[in-house]
Length: 258
Ligand code: CAA
Image (cartoon, rainbow, N blue to C red):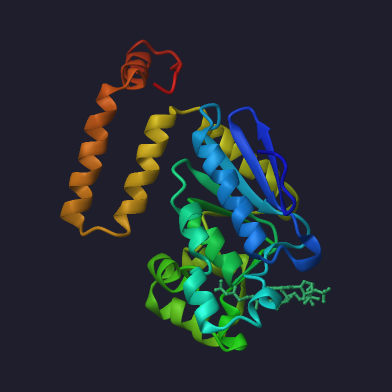
């Protein structure tokens, strides 16, 4: 699980730290990065000791997009038959919470990757954008839908049609990010939030992630029903008994992820 070439993986207690590590290419997302990220997060989902992950980038970028040099020579049939980018759907379907700690450029596929995560904590030096229009293409890793759901049509059209870059403050005002923090405190803050989340019961974290993710896809009545079934299901866990008993007994709960 640790033998990667384009990413690094560290486990810090119940938190995984995954770093995109092609700093010379501003962490451009080529097929190898995609394979390694998908493999790493599948392993994290299987690892009973990890509750939550932080995804960040080495150097100046979170990720400056899909790898333009890798894509440039490809034909329609290359892209279509291979279903280029399909691996990212598997990352987006990760079942445990993922925090994007956006340390710099999050452009094109980099912005789309951040939006696949559950929280986006941005450095005050982060830059976001969907510049694909400048390359004669469009977003291709889910940006048109995830960005529009996140910020609404007016702002999404502004970014997708002009390709302009925005700073963390503008991204925050749009509702694209969860929090903006001083650059030097980014990783510490992201790991702090991750540790706070990791103190909760994994089944309830997974259910919470699943219901909020489904909320973006379902009509309200269906979403409310889906939430209720998952909520009711948690009454089959020991951690629900423990959490509620601990509240009544005025003590901290001891969760067992069961
Ligand atoms: N793909 C491949 N290589 C990239 C890259 C990318 N997306 N972004 C940066 N790089 C490489 C550069 O080619 C350069 O490599 P060399 O040193 O070998 O020349 C290196 O990273 C450093 O980049 P710059 O010299 O350009 O750094 P800069 O500070 O002058 O500019 C930048 C930074 C504004 C982010 C600029 O690199 C840039 O515009 N990058 C491309 C951004 C982009 O268009 N992203 C969208 C890609 S398409 C996409 O993502 C499709 C999708 O929807 C999934």
